[in-house]
Image (cartoon, rainbow, N blue to C red; front, top):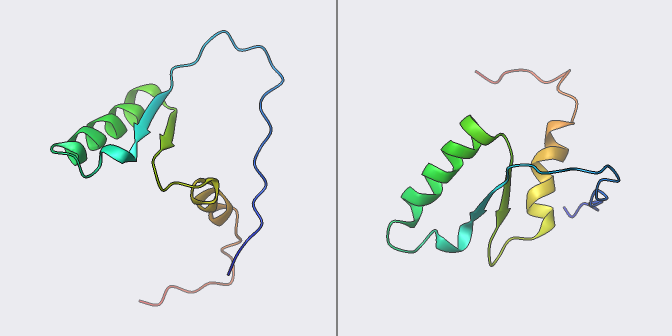
Length: 81
């Protein structure tokens, strides 16, 4: 199933600065890459609050699918356990 994804517009507000950690998935297969990415992700989530993901095979739809999924209604679903 292919979904149409609308990329959000850039902000129109003046922003002096914002810390932003860039996670480069291209280093995943490099020696120590998984450990570096895990440390960067941990720091971004616990201390910075914002992150940007980039990589050689990453498309915008990969980034917006989790946000779309999070907006789906959950009422009416039963736990299968």
